[in-house]
Figure (tube, one colour):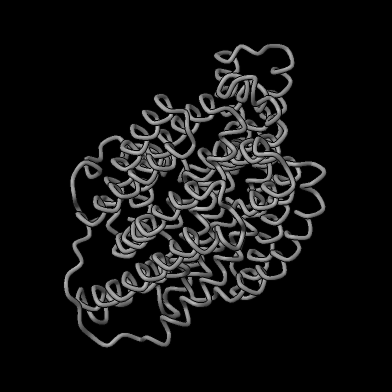
Length: 490
């Protein structure tokens, strides 16, 4: 059932990512680098404020709902969700009020006060939506998540594209994003319908989990997320924010499809596996998920980096030529972050998040120092290098800890062979880009290179019969599944 849930999640994420990428590309071309940098900074600020407002609440819901369902049933789940939702509403309103009224005074930001207040209005709606989505993830109602994801992405694309074509104004675009946030929240409310709850909750354990995870997520925002935008805003021009943010979004659009979908499936899966008898099952899930994540991201990173120049010219236009180096670095450095998804899912699911916290403190401090050293000199390229280096350290710490503590195996051999095969495919594509810029030819060559990659893995014994069978099963399930179009618990 795990692969079916992941397949359903991936299919919905693919559709949502497609619409998001289309919206991002159109917005980038119409606004230009400077205005796009201002809009990207607004989106970053919204994400930071939502993170501060919700903290570890979404992950706590995903983590504890499977346990509460066994102990207290539906009413226990409703009680926990209602209390955490109430806290989210209060914290998000406080964050909005601070950003709208207090921050402009402290920062003397009277010239862009409308910009800040529009962002402030979005925060409560986006925060509530995140908590409701986590509730559905904890309940493992992935068909409902699929519907809300697809419908929400369609709505956001229509609203934002209309706004950018008719107005070409950053504030109007932020207001349009706010409209989408409101509609998305009501859509999720219609799917969740959280009733009255009762029961005795383990408040101490839940609060401790939320506090520790909140600290981790704040540190993760420095290590894994776009914290470099903060330093780019202070040490570089707005167009450098655009270069970094667009590269981050484009790479994320293709590299995080499977990891994001898999993470929401693995955390509740690990949480439901308790006891010594389930140890082998946890070990198998960790090994298999790490292996498939490596096989997935390595060719994307190498071929994507090779295609950085034609991708930028064809998709974004010549005004974004300065982004090519940033995009290339971002593709390569995405490898460690994607592979680390299996490790973080295991640690969160087994309540070992303190490891991530302690490592995150040290890596975050190092990341801030490197940001200050590299971003003023190298702008968006320096930001991409620092982000990638921090992710590599974080991924390495997680993998080493799991191997030494749990004695779980990691697929080193398959990862190395996949890396070599992906490099061969990437070099072939890169050399071809020096001879021709015909995009159709390059796309065909990329598909051929992917075939070469798979052929090398087959010859080296990395791909086995069960891998092909699993791929067929997932393809058939996605193709034939009508669950995405109707409400059904999986």
